[in-house]
Image (cartoon, rainbow, N blue to C red):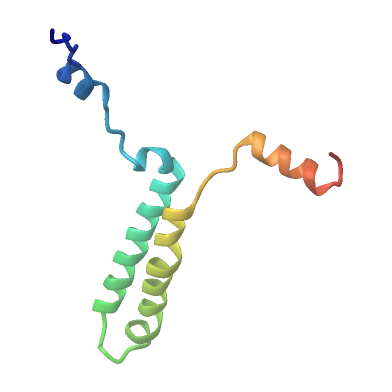
Length: 100
């Protein structure tokens, strides 16, 4: 005699798996502010490069400095910036003072 096998309800198992965006974990208000600030600095850098003559000091010195600051410093800062939580900082203070 054959045994009756219970089947899992496939529809329920698919509904239970909810995908959460990985960016929701990391990105907070400060990260978005850094990102907007980076875009603003880059737009200002390209604007300064476009005004004036091609061999002016602003086109050859100032605007590349602004672009490097935007691309190399501010954009990575927007990605890596993370606010320290109160519990983490208090634990670090206790470990640094030699108390256990």
